[in-house]
Length: 537
Image (cartoon, rainbow, N blue to C red; front, side, top):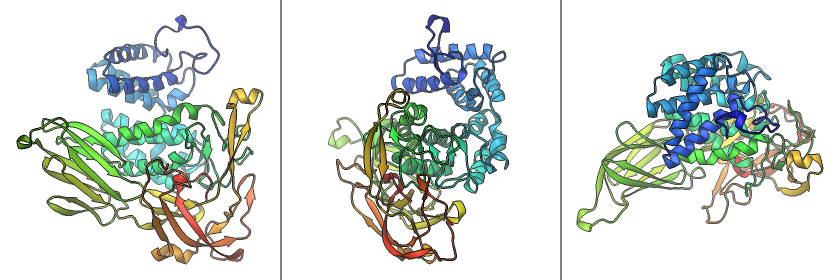
């Protein structure tokens, strides 16, 4: 186990058992204990955590967070979050003292995120540390109440948008942070850890901008980095990814060319241990209790939530094909048997987030339809009956955003769209010591499809240049792959003769060009949701 007397456990060489005293692995275990308590209400969790935190308060002055490794100092926000969680359940005063100490020993994330220096230069931070550190100022704000702590992550994202940022809601980071060039790596752990940070920040602040970014990562970066069967994953993904082959690429840290192939342990094993928290914790953070005795739907996905509202058990069923389409239906249900003459009712409010891109959104109930302002919430408060429905309509328009080097990214709703390419998956074997290090096998993914396309500048501002085709989701059809993609955008593109590959990646190109000297004609292309692609531009 992670807690208890280390002397009672035999020594095993490795990061976790060879350095059993290190603070960082225990921070992960604390998150697991919290999840277990939420599922079972097992009171032993509170006792174990309280005893461990008393031990931390005793030991940290002599053995601070970075004493054994520096991971704890970078990721102290994870530790602090669990201290506050326990305090909110037990009220033990010593936890406040411990929280102050942990914050003091953690890297100054408010300063890092608020300043221009660290986030405006490459090779300054470990990419996953940044994802985990993002929440620390907000976690600490619950104690400090300092406005600068609330503002720091917002300032950080504003800086990243113009320096390290990727359109997936993340940043370039193939171990160390990099400029947001679309052929730099983006680590799987960065995606799920930033999602976890955003979920906590949204829960504390209610700031809907964090919900927007959470959906951007979850519905774009997350589904593309693992196989459909979830039996293999990539260590890094590229925004422009033309081949997933075993080749040394232009990454700040490479792992024998295994970074882009789909395998059990390629790159580094951490992502295998970590990525599975992405979807379950997203589901845990779709719905929130509101202070006025109601519920808030802040992130949208097919779901079912049960709660006691107005003294009654109520179930809300969310039916939707979001993020592929903008229609969401919420159905009210009162569980149990009821006499027809005594059907239950309940009075409570629903707070419904209107996405920032959803201009012209509407919310419809039995009483009629009301408009919703983009980027805000709509409050629906009434007496609810069995079978009542709320229907939300979020218009999805094709839009174009600008990123690295003036490059254009096609968007629709919360989804990015990427070039659809044929995919050939080839299974290969690791042998000898590599099989121990990386797992028994891996997939390479290649394509014969041309990819060297650019969009006409004049078309970017013309909605009619993009034809959207939708098809309904079908039971048994997995939507997050090229074959099952429910939405296709057809448009015309220019063939860029001189845009060729380099070291297994899309080579250098002027992403924004006013001179079309290398154009070799025009072609019809198909764009599908980024999360449905493996290979893409």
